[in-house]
Length: 437
Image 1: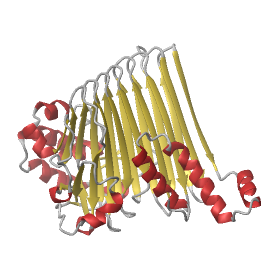
Image 2: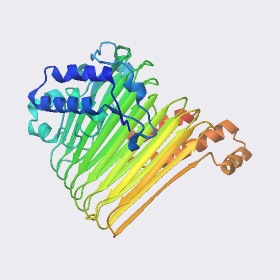
Image 3: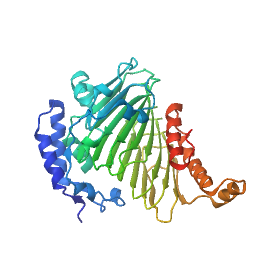
Image 4: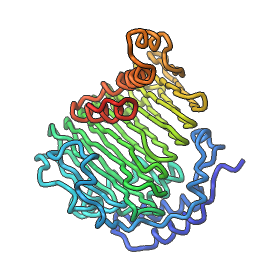
């Protein structure tokens, strides 16, 4: 059974990247990435985790590494994607850090946010201890490909017992200069013992051209720490986006992730976490909105590796036209993980007869003292509610739009930060209604 795609054009670029100059701390990871990618290529639909998502379009394309030309990007173009001008923001244009568009002098004490290349020299062990340990090159072909190009990216380091009230925004932007190119950022996040912070990871396309983003994020949440991590994917409509998040949590920690997906022609978001300390918990939520011929795949894996941990998941999708949504969520409970409390919910609304979804919630339990539930629903707009609204004088289109927004709002309300929540609600409202505020 053939479970790999060779992707010769990507392999050629990966070979060149792994042989090019790089800091010593990155060279070993580059070499490992190249070996793994050469051996395994990209996954086919014969691999269970990729059964509903074909990446042959990526494998058969010829992408060159982006050159990081930020000259055509202005602050005015970025303004619609900035949550707050008072928040620290690092901007990456076509895969490369753009200091002229970034705002870092307002970083609070206790947190350091540095481009990866700079962090290798200034943070030393913080980088080398984490890099490639949570997301090894052997994970899959996309992680291996990312490792082959290690060099660009960012490190977020929150010192122990520091409570950072101001979110940090990492904004990755592609414009026309990036068309035909690919970027492979590596993001490292470390929240030390009893720290608390919020990080936003945004992906934005300022072009309708074709390009490929392949990101890997490694997250460590130490004992007693809380990290809120939001990923907002608004790539260009002809882009390809693959993003993998690997997290590991310590005792009594809490990792909160929200995945907001509206962009790209083909997208895949992986969120994996290991609950590796007693009494810790994770909350994974998300909203996917697709139309046209978009394909969006969200996969989660929560591994309960210690006792008395909890996990919560709620993912919603709204699919129109001929779009295709995929949700594959797995909760794995090791035998040691007694008194696990896990709940997973996946709901999809289909706005057309040709939209489709494949949902696969899974529980794999090897402990006997657990409380775990999961469920998935697929449906259309509630015709009874629609009739009620129309009987009150609201026209058909507005009624349908408001009911669709109400379906989405349920999961958006789980976002703790009011500014972020309000902005994502406005984006959702603009997509489904004529109301903008």
